[in-house]
Length: 202
Picture 1 (spheres, one colour):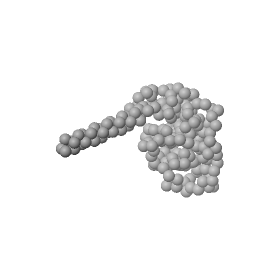
Picture 2: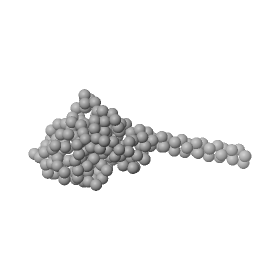
Picture 3: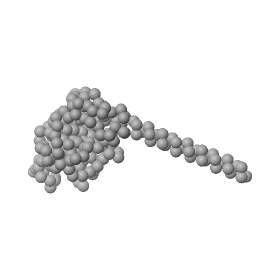
Picture 4: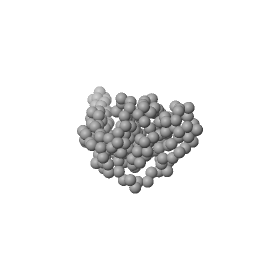
């Protein structure tokens, strides 16, 4: 009786240990998976056709914020540039993947054309295949323009992966197709207020 109980108990312990090992292995494998949103060296396909929902357009948008304010709705995958008179210029965006989304109030502190890319150490740790530095250009994941947010590592920038617009794949930055980020770049100065929201209307 005791021997049978002991054998059954040991069997369950072994099963549990194997299960934990598989979960840890799966977690490690997931953490090391290439981020499809970052493909250094890939030149953007300018012929890619965006989903109509994510094409730049002037829309009705009620807000108490003054014209020139940027409001980002991560849930909607849209960036709004307030125009006044109940309207806003709306751009489709790609946002942070699960665990990398955030909200807050910041200002644009810097603007750059064809920006260089230096992935921060925490990104290198998660994605060791990334280059430590990449000069600006068509194959740079930051795309044609970048708007730097406060003193953070986050930016509103272009992309060499237009097919990721409308998805959640980044490490917390917000991406637009190159033509849209170039348009936004010309419309907003350094100092522009940027409101990042997780849910519409919050």
